[in-house]
Length: 176
Image 1: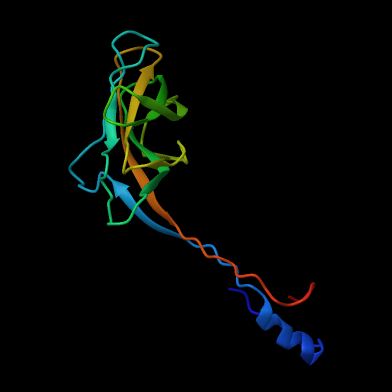
Image 2: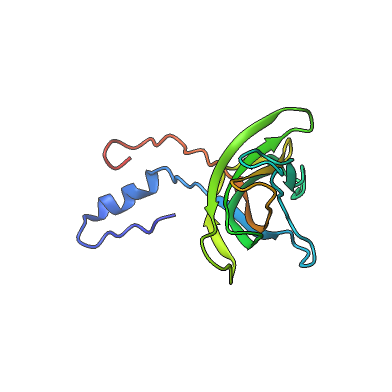
């Protein structure tokens, strides 16, 4: 909600502000690292043949962050690359998976290791948001050299959109 300033404005316009509809749009977020268990790892592995994708790996399970209200939408805010096995070029593809053989593409990123890997680095917003009530998040990895893998973790945010109906104002334009 905004604060209305009326300094230097006639008092009747100050009263007119009470007739205005109050428009408000909130997006509640709750950030969380995945995996939350510090001993767990997310380790996508490429196929042993160069330039071909390996198997799908589940990053976030369906319904993993259910707080009792739906829809539970999740956005991967950060992909943290914690380790890369070799000097190589990688492609990570993200998919929403509904439990059947249907994969919905959510995005892809390309990662290159050019030198000695000494610390983790962050990729911002690697894929678009998805509904975790109906889907899990999976990833597959392709390596330029073949047979490589990477170690990742995620920073995820759960989003809840709130709606607010703006009532019609009985006032006259431009103050109503």
